[in-house]
Image 1 (spheres, one colour):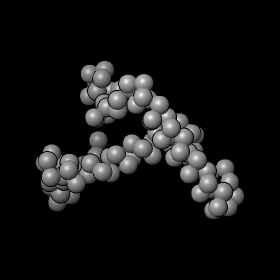
Image 2 (cartoon, rainbow, N blue to C red):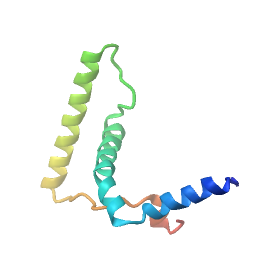
Image 3 (cartoon, rainbow, N blue to C red):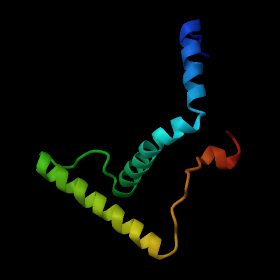
Length: 97
């Protein structure tokens, strides 16, 4: 349990209220999409860390990973698997959150 100073607690509650507005969600929607893509690249290509010692080969690895994800997405789209509009966590699906 964390006890915060009253000013810090008020600021935290204000930020949480802001996150419940449509304007905040609209402003952060692109970030969520980008983070989703990065997560998919890391998960599918195991590219959390670069295997290459220099910037040129690291960049090539990133380009190949992005190309692979695009091909995976195209294949999924052609097979009728449409992307989810929102991501639901395992805890939410299990009713624990």
